[in-house]
Image (tube, rainbow, N blue to C red; front, side, top):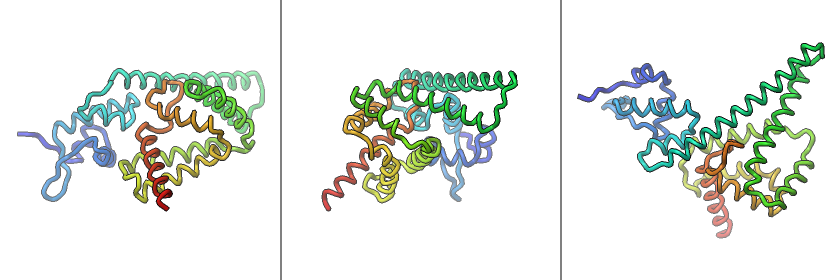
Length: 258
């Protein structure tokens, strides 16, 4: 006889919250059965999948990668593992850079230099900006033409002095998370078109100054997002990029029809 568990028992056995279990169900990673009164019940196979999900998340695999790994289809596991190792190395590099920066600050404090919180925050932002530029350069150099690189250098110098990169990045992260949670969607649906308008609005600082070489280079870079190495973690998955392109095509078709 097959052993079944209710959601509370599964939460206890796996250490996951009921909310997490329902989230994984919504993403199609698990498919619990339902009793006559609508309660979720889980079998031993569900527990095995949840154990695998937890292990893969600890290894920093994205939910889209986990879905592919557990889908039963042929997956290039070696390539995925290599990508994760590259991403972890990138994290390690960032941690090492942060440690080096803080060690330097502590040395300055120990020598009697007066450093307040505002100065510390400024040093951290400077370090983050430098590291981010270095990481993006490692990826961009593979796909941008020399003209595009020169154009990007000129536009960086023209950025406003009060540009809040952290706030801008947070806004992008929020939009990407909402799109990922809403997928799949029909490209022509009102929800998809709303997301596309938000996407284009956030791109406005780039599109306002971008040359054709810059636009072509960025499109090529994101068309190969699944080939990026550990220099820079992609800001969104290949699935989201493909979705945005499909929505853009649907948007252009609707405009052409008038």
